[in-house]
Length: 367
Image (cartoon, rainbow, N blue to C red; front, side, top):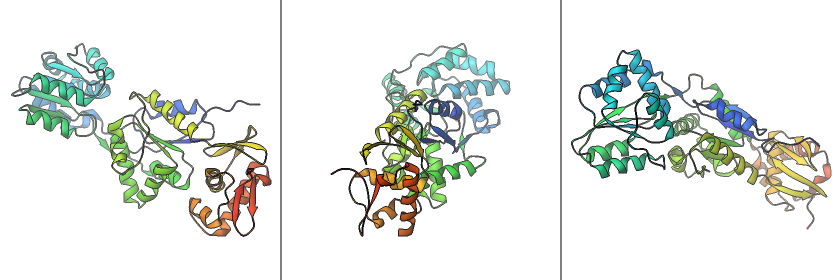
């Protein structure tokens, strides 16, 4: 028998702009199908006038502390400054300040620039960096905070309330995708049941996806799908915040790493894959497919929706009206009958799904 990879049959949607291929490769290696729908793109650093203005402001006077929140952002800042002819001056000013790195990637970028960090929390948390600064005393100090694609209002406001002058350094900014088509198709896949999980690596990607869904009238359906069937996975609590605000549950890895995120998604999907016995045969649901006695069965979205619904309570009789609500596009009783017929054909055994006269359908599970 051919080995079936752990994520075979599942479809993963990726909205990331950065390292999307790397994340996708982790899922493909486990057998999943990956669909890309970038929700954001990054404004090129050298073209960002806000970054240049913030850099010049920083160079006007001494800087007591500089907070580096991301490795790619810090490296890009230095590279952009070199392009403007300000690289040597910026490194000199940074070298005379106290450098704080949020995590190991920011720490690595600081060291790659020939500098050294003075503090980096084991938790990789902005909150702990802020606590360290406040405990050290910031009244009258001039502090630069490298942003990571979106504002950090609580962080910045807390420093200012404690008496610091804060320079916000917008090293890169997120904007909407240049081509919204792939994201639109990915959202359609979430709604029609052909996408099983959405892993997110940044809060801006989540916010952008939700904004597109709202603008196109699809937000209620997207929320329902993420609440019930589609795994919403986030690399950390900051990324999860826009989903949490809508009451959408998420799974998160213990450490904010892409590899850990992929493992968390894999575990969540496998734990949600029902395994049951019907008609004397073993059935395992796999996202967009099923294994029947170890044999692979590809199943279209509408029949798969029927199988998922019937598998929620194996052996219980589901009325046609109940099953209509499970269909991706709804419909009438005839649509249920058609989907059930296609499901039986896909499973290769008509007897696995029983018709209960005048009542509905059930999986052929012994009482």
